[in-house]
Amino acid sequence: MRSRDGDYSFTLRLCTVVLCFSLALSASDYLISYRCSVQNAALYNEHLDIAKSMKECQGIPDQTLILPSSHNHNFQSIISKHANRFREYLQKLPFEIRSSQTTTNAHINAVTILTLKTQCFKVDFNDTFVTISHLKQPEN
Amino acid sequence: MKYSFVLISLLSIAAFGAEKNSKIPIVTTIPEVNKPLSNTKAEDVTAPSNTTINVVYNKEQAAQAMPPHCTMPAHCAMPPKVEKETPKKDVLSANEPLIISVVGQGVAPVNTTSPAQAYALAKRAATADAYRLIAEKVKGVSVDGQDLIKNMMVKRSTVRTSVQAMVRNANIVETTFKDGLCEVEMEITLSRSDFAQ
Image (cartoon, chains in turn green, brown):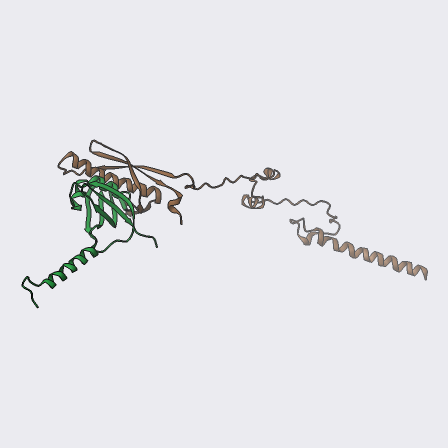
């Protein structure tokens, strides 16, 4: 039976579903990948991809970085403010390097590609700072 | 009768001796290689006392005949030298970590809006170069070359070098930026525990 205040049971159900989904999505886990291409000693392409994880990541916190946030809970804006520190932090993680150099008739063409494969990070937001922890995958 | 027995015995002894003399040449002609067997006569043959055979070897044959420790025949009289084998030392010892340090170089792109942007981009390029150098030092480089020759002239000469590796825990020690060139000194510490199986 429909009440005067509206469909109360439907609202309750919807809120429950949203709450469950928000818990299941685990908002504090982020997936980050990085790719940087250098040709002839000059940077020509760089990608830093950040996305919220759709499911909770499994792993042990390995390397930790603390960045000031000043009540900002937008992770991408925090990282863009402290890009250099974050890149130095990423360098501790396993980078894949692919480099090739071709010399044809004394003309040199060198390409180096650095790739950080998609890694899961646990991000804890606080009032004044944010803690970023790399989750190391358990070895089988 | 007595004389007949004595005569027969003397004849038999003489015949036995003649048979013995006829067998000698076959045995003793072996050292004299140059003389053909058909020319040998029983009177020429004397019993060999000390026969010396001089054989001329090639150098290769001589080397094969000599023991491995001597190169000259005079050296063969000396006892062979026993070389002390030094134990091979591992590159990575259990106690001492190995520090590899490289300097990567990078330049800023032409179309930068500010010196700060130029510095940041040059530093990233230098960092990638330093990573490449570390990978080349630790893992090695694969080299491939190709020359195209046409009408006795080199048309195209190509050398390709490539490396692919995974590097972690690299540290930037020092960064310098001068005249548009950024240099990044990077080092990595390798220890045996990193490679424990």
